[in-house]
Amino acid sequence: MKDEMSRLELIIGKILRVGIAISIGLMLFGCLLLVFRNNKEIIPYYSYLELNKILSGILVLQPNAWLMGGLFVLILTPVIRVLTSVFAFMKVKDWTYMWITSLVLLILIVAMIFGISQK
Image 1 (cartoon, rainbow, N blue to C red):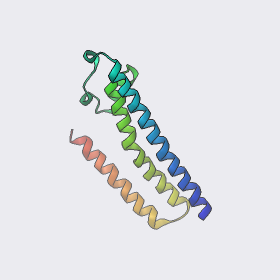
Image 2: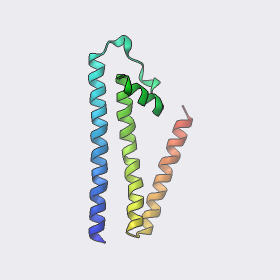
Image 3: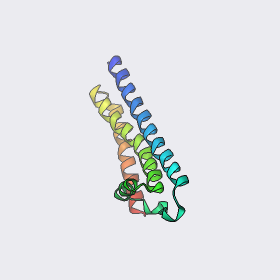
């Protein structure tokens, strides 16, 4: 069981590192685009508050879309970590932590839903 928990901790750590690296990459590229693009072509950041707009902005190389995409990945990374932890605790049959982590995941989801509905 300890070996399995160690392996799961490594996976969770890798999820966090990869999420942060992707987020940093998106934001750095967005900053570079912001520096080298003509200011008249830049669409304001608040235009990219929905995932489909972020993705379409990324495709046309809008700097603020890249920055918002980086923020989205940065926010999503801990959520994925919590979701992975739920499955990890289920796998090792640690029901107490599984329920606690599930509650945390539920709180995150509810907070995101209320955050989206407040815009």
